[in-house]
Structure formats: C-alpha cells, structure tokens
Image (tube, rainbow over all chains, first blue to last red; front, side, top):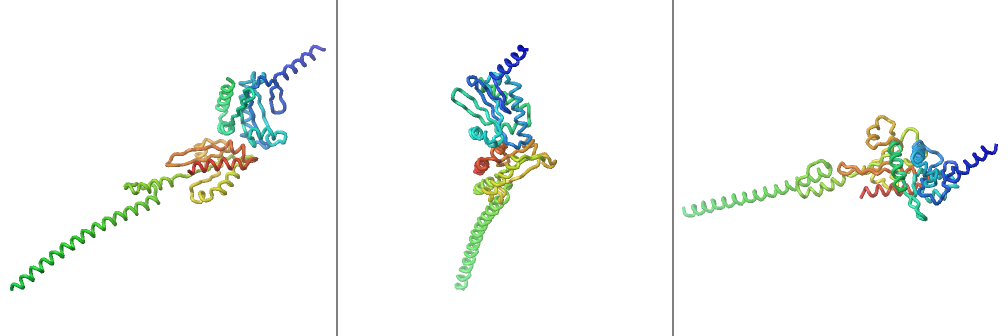
Length: 142
Length: 183
C-alpha cells in the first residue's frame, strides 16, 4: 500500500523540480538553467487569429523543445494582459493586446525581441510559422 | 523732263526701300510669331503635363514640370482587411485607423493622395486584392505607390497589440509610417 503512494509522490516531486504549470503558464523552477522565455499576451475577448497564434506557439515549443521546457531552459508564459494581476509584466513587455515576445536571458541581462508583427503575418501558414519560430529559438539557444 | 526723270527714279528708290522694309518687318514679325508659337507650345505642353501625367515631355523646361507631375503620381493606400467574424481588436484597429486619417490627414484624403479602404476578404469581389496582399484575416497595410512601384508596411501586429488598449501608441506608429511615406 505504501509503495504506490511513495511512487506517486516521487513522480509529483520530480515533476515539480523541473517545471510546473499554473493555468496557462509553464514556469521554470530552475532559474540557473533559464535561458529563454517565450511570452504570449492576449486580451480577454480573443479572436480566432489570436488563439491560433497561441496554439502554434505551444505546438512549436512542445513538439520541438520539450526537453528544454522540462529542464527549465525555456519558460512559456501565456498571459492575459487585461487582468490587473498581470499589469506589471504586461507593461514591462509593452503588451496591451496580442503580443508575442521572446526574451533571451544571459545572467542578469535580458534581451527581448517582439515577434508580434511576424506572428500575425505568418499565422495562416502553419508550417512556415512553426519552422521559423523553431529556427529562431534554436539560434538563440546556441 | 529731267525733273520728271529725277522724280521717277526717286519714286522707284522709295518703293524699293519701302518694299524691303516691309519684308524685314514681315520677317521680324514671322520670327516673333515663331517665338510666341514656341512659347504657346511650351505653356500648352506644361498645362498638359500638369493635367495629364502620361503625356510625353520633350523640352528641358518641360522636364521640370515632368518631375512635378511624377511627384504628384505618388499616393498612399491604407487598406484594412477583415473577415465576417470580427473581434474587438479588429474593430478597434479599423476605428483608430479612421480616426487617425480623419484627424491628421484630412487634406491628403480629400486630394486623393491617401486612399483608405475597408475590405471584407470574404466577399468575392475582393478576392484579387486579398490575394495580392496575401491576407487571410484581419490585416492593416500602408502602401506607398510611386511610379508604379509599391512599398508595403504591414501594421497588423502593431494594430492587435495597441489599437484597443493603447490607442495613442498605435496612432503614433501609424502616423510615423504615413508621414515617412509622404516625404
């Protein structure tokens, strides 16, 4: 009886050591490993295009960078910029509507690239969207 | 008799002189007419060039009016594309774009320098323009058209990012794009 319980607890503990999911957001628990944060901001009333961008971002990350997410190298944050609790982070990233940003972290330094215009241009071409975002992230992780 | 001969010779000389003088005057008048004609042609040509930019320009003085006419060929297309189901951001982009144009570019709109269109991409009549711009959903393009060549700026991302909750920032970006193209 005790063995399965220990097994389940161990699994939960192991999982939480690497990453945890709160609502839409995947948060790294290993700040030492963190190199890249992918942030997608949206408003409360979302259109099809906005939702599709999120879907493609998730697809790109979880199909190509699952190991990096699990080990805390990549963070993925999906944030409603209209909620008061997200005001500070939304203002930090200049996000007042649908906004896709990638932040590269090197020690104390952060460099953010805004991919919103790119995302809206490529959202209707799924293959190109995934391929270009994948290349961009791979390049930043080198 | 001698007097008669003198008067006759004097008369012939006078007539000859007068005839020559008339001829000179005619020649001078002819020359004057040519200049006037040339001037008229140039003026007419200039008017034509100002009114009809397709006309060919041959004289150097007309080349100035040619460049003026060419400069007048430049215009800016502001096209907002949307589908049938529109979200709040999509509607906000259209509204803020219209507001910006009506506030800051009323003159250019009335003179036809700026052309604004809201285009429903789901209507069959808009298929060609939607394909040209490669749009599949809500999109905002500012296009500079100069001498037949087009330079496009896609402001869709900025629109979705700012139009609803940070209107002033979107207006600033849109104004900068249009004003840079108008230079």
